[in-house]
Image 1 (cartoon, protein in one colour):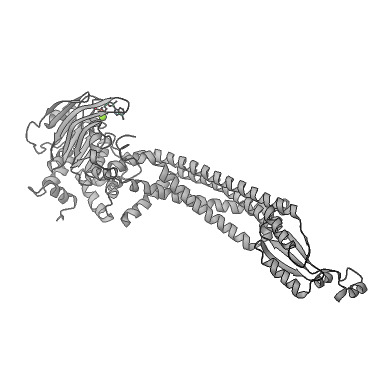
Image 2 (cartoon, each protein chain N blue to C red; image 1 turned 45 degrees about the vertical axis):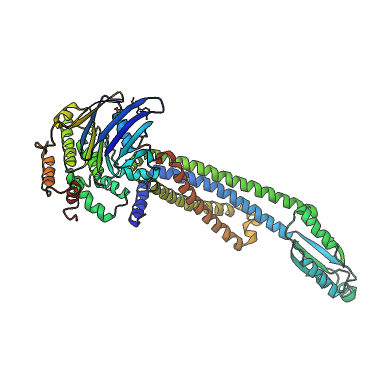
Length: 309
Length: 266
Ligand SMILES: Nc1ncnc2c1ncn2[C@@H]1O[C@H](COP(=O)(O)OP(=O)(O)O)[C@@H](O)[C@H]1O
Ligand SMILES: [Mg+2]
């Protein structure tokens, strides 16, 4: 296709939008509503996810080294735990560290007495896990218990299992909701565009009668769909951001921001919004383009609609 | 140029619109197709445009055997013909210029070609002063001339007009017919469906009569084509003057190119 033709087609697309301002606004509004719904579902999902992440990160097991283990044995135990595939972090809390926590809590004299070999505590490791799924978690705990120089492992197995289960349920529901909403928007968009195509069947018939190819007829419509989709994506992002920040600023909803985005800090918040923007734009442009390209169907058939509607 | 061999057309609902039509139209002919409403005239034209396909038989147009035509070739077949409709089929949101230019842009013509050619074609139909107008600001006759300009702009070998004068005043009908006659004089094959008997008898051309889907009479042109002697009005007279001042004896396509491209054709 010639460059001058492409320029002409793009101009045609814009002219169509202006000519059919009402339809353009309707398409944008439909797409914006669908994007906002999907976006909200996504944000809720992300919030729950980050809440989980927070709780997960708090969910640790404490592994106590045997009283008989010397310094080298304790260090070896730490390495052994770290080597497990389901372990994300291992932190040594020596018995001296533990004792230090009691400084000022117990009488000064007693504290002094407990120094050195009189230390009543055990060296321990704070272990963080990757997968809290019941079976995996339990087998990890078991393999730690089976290691030499382990006195005991302290953990809360039930909470871990419940969390893992909840997370997979939330993931499933969130995914299904988003996919359903996207299909609904594709359907509504394609119908809205079908209406605009219908209202322009005369124009399409004329184009066919003067020998326009399918691609030539379709391109302005697809370009139009892309422009509308892009506009809808930007608009949705703006609205979403506005609503979300307003909601978070409400004192009554403070608890949400505690367990959610703010907890994991800016590093997570920024990518989520960037993801949302890119997602909105990509989905908007694709839906607009496909919606218009696909919904032209029968009006494009070469044989029909040249001299009559 | 156009050949119908044993063509039948039965629509999906069972209506037999054409039965065993055998017709041969040569390049450069001017043919009237007449018949009562519902006789099958439009169906005849639709088979030529390949908007409908025959139930039986073969249609050959401009060298395209239509039964062998691939879908993606249909646009290219249509570029060899200019189609004029009873209801003009202009785009009301486009100027006269753009309505005509549209048909050129569809074929991938460059801006330069469009800017050069459209004004000449508008001049040809006497609408050079209306280029910036919108269709709704024009009379029916003027609108039909825009539609004719659009049909002509790609220099088609064939013009098909389905009741082109059906929606305009009778006096203006002659104007349109005279333009078609002039176009034909320069070599373009012209097919006109009409049921205005006055027009048919006035122009003395080949007349094909269709009745109930069958060709019942095919009367050849009564006399050699005569140059138009009595232009219907000043506009047409002016246009014809322009046309007649073109070099005589050159092939029709060359003449039209000459007129259209402002006299700098190779
Ligand atoms: N798309 C169609 N489907 C069914 N019947 C049709 C269709 N188009 C035309 N017809 C019928 O075919 C016959 C011929 O129609 P047409 O060719 O339009 O006649 P004319 O142009 O001479 O008035 C009529 O009876 C008409 O009702
Ligand atoms: Mg008809």
